[in-house]
Image (cartoon, rainbow, N blue to C red; front, side, top):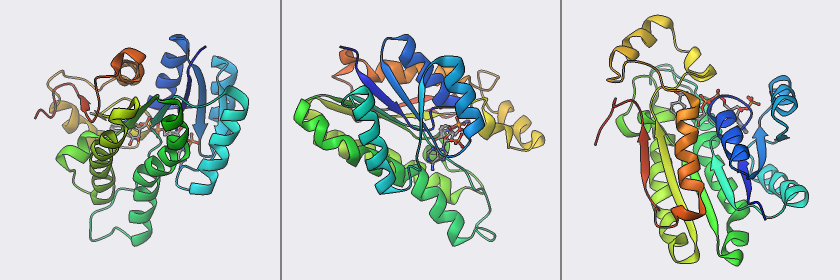
Length: 240
Ligand code: NDP
């Protein structure tokens, strides 16, 4: 029977590419989104993938959302924690609300979603969790203490949870994308983006499909020996 995957933030950008790649590989996919109804409707009509609205920062909403997916598609085998936001500001200008929002969605969302599926994965002895971190969680970035902290937290979260899942058939890995051509990067001012691209050895922004390829690899049944790892997909921008 086809495995069931939830992709948070799965209706646009990297998440959209991940949802489509998983569908094409034969998985049953549920694409979550936060509130952009128009894009979600257009995505579902175009791809035939069902979209589900809930806020990953809200624990109760995650429990309800996952329950709905389970009722409609079956128990969840794969979770791709991709939903993310930025609220960039220097420390001088950053508000406490801007900190909380970014940490709650990017990092809190990973906890909420993993918690919502964990017991079922343990009972069934199988799970694949892929958390989308960021090059800026590895290297830091000016004006992003909130985002860099949240993404860096994802990498620690991944390694800790991987240890709990390892003997139970559940792998937990992260992908740290570099700069990928999506709406999120379109929000970066052109003169800043030009400087960023100049620092990417491959000489261009990444494509969402290039991240999806990594997710597909880590989600596979055959990837059971890969856990607690972070796959950097960044055009050579940050190597360590
Ligand atoms: P986009 O802004 O293009 O899309 C974000 C998606 O996340 C949307 O589907 C959005 O839903 C959803 N989302 C946002 N907040 C929530 C929430 N609270 N609950 C549920 N869904 C939510 O982002 P990208 O595709 O660029 O980024 C995807 C992930 O990759 C993020 O985690 C990002 O931090 C990370 N990343 C991106 C990089 C890049 O260069 N683009 C680089 C490194 C990491 P809706 O459409 O309803 O708003």
